[in-house]
Length: 439
Ligand code: ADE
Image 1 (cartoon, helix red, strand yellow):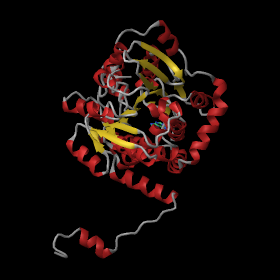
Image 2 (image 1 turned 90 degrees about the vertical axis):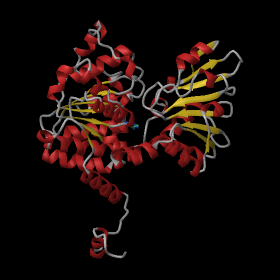
Image 3 (image 1 turned 60 degrees about the vertical axis):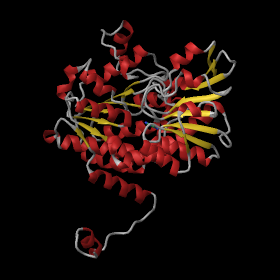
Image 4 (image 1 turned 180 degrees about the horizontal axis):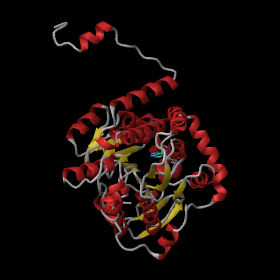
């Protein structure tokens, strides 16, 4: 949910009914299908599986209450299995109302005993009731994808903050919010910027978002990418990944940016760079990945071609000004095909919006593939173990993931890929630690 939508009032009757339940999923009859998908994904998550085997033996999370607010996918299910194998007492809730895989949620409850509260398409009240359930679990460790739990621990649920050992954050947007909290001197608990680990953002944000964003657009629209002008707003790791994959499909890729250094990078990577006002009339497909609000506004929509496709792959649903588009349009038709709304402008031009401006890769597709989530979630699992082992020493600040964890994960991933790398010779080590040799 977007940051402006905090709800502080007493739980509604519907929310109270949800809170009385041990879990809340769409349909338990979907569990068998979910289990199949979880186990298939597991095959592509070998590093996490190795950690799970060790956790099962050593139980480093024994008795620790944990609440996770993540996209409820087959990959997340394998992270939950790992934490549970380590002895954690878990609650899982959705970090986005559209990203839940209902079969996976059912299987997590039925086959893996994880208390899960998440339903694809859940409304605002249900979303917040689920977050509330995660807080009332009185977690010692939280995992967020977008900082909703940490936000709650600093606003509506401050009473639960004192029991927290650490909070772990999965995404760029969440880390930006946590660093803002720290800068303003208002952070009350230790947090780990898991997103900023190289084993996370270099692969998940770039290759994961790159592929899954394209996947969401194609699944929803069946559009041919080759020969189209694809406008990518934002050239961070996610924007880079998506631009690279769109180019690979034969698109003419245009980048819009506010950061001059990133804009040069985009130019030297071979893309055209221009403003959104210049891109609006020439684009066929638009995708925002900036982490900022109202990147595409009514003045841009008004200039777009008939049947322009517009979507967002940034964390929150604030990058497209869809309220503004709704006011501009003379007709709005919901779900003309699954996950696509059609806005007809006074000019007669139609704008096709995917997944209501929410994450297109999780709303209209299945998110990042398992083999990339393997590294992200291995980083989460090992960082939670580190936080518990070092609980007494953690300062109230935004921590980086320890380098040793990143190196371990990178080495394990390489090994499972069957790739070997060279080792430094003693002379090379000496050279790298000297400032006089070879000059
Ligand atoms: N974020 C992006 N893709 C994801 C996935 N497959 N599972 C969990 N979180 C994700």
